[in-house]
Image (tube, rainbow, N blue to C red; front, side, top):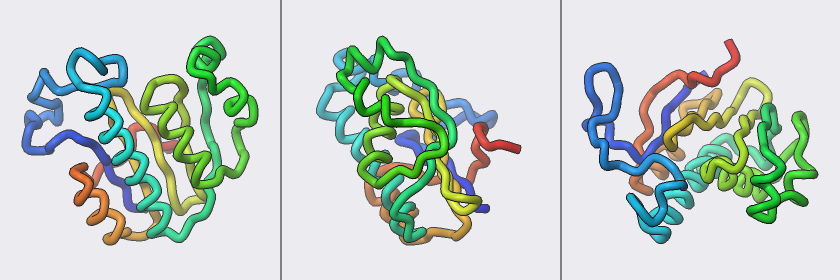
Length: 163
């Protein structure tokens, strides 16, 4: 299995231990209006979601499975996604559109989830706007597309992988 860390963070701005140097970089949706504009946030969010779909396309996947889910009913009601979330349960097959919605909600820290397709594909989300994607194939086309979006694709084992 190939595994990558997909982020907006330039790897050249890391200490030897992997920690990120630029303390002024925004790391969450809660910083919209202080460290990042809504416009810039939405553009980055769209790029992360497009990264997921690029890898799904390269793997020729039309759906994936919801393998882990955490959400807080108060949050989902506040963001008017309670009805959508009521349909989500571990083990269901998700369409590309549902994947996009779950990714958006996860990136905005309304929910947390893990997605996969058998032992061929996964998407995991971490803290501070980190995302991990794993595939059974090299997915050169997807990696190039994601890099053209301005994101970085680095070989990296997901800290959320089930070992």
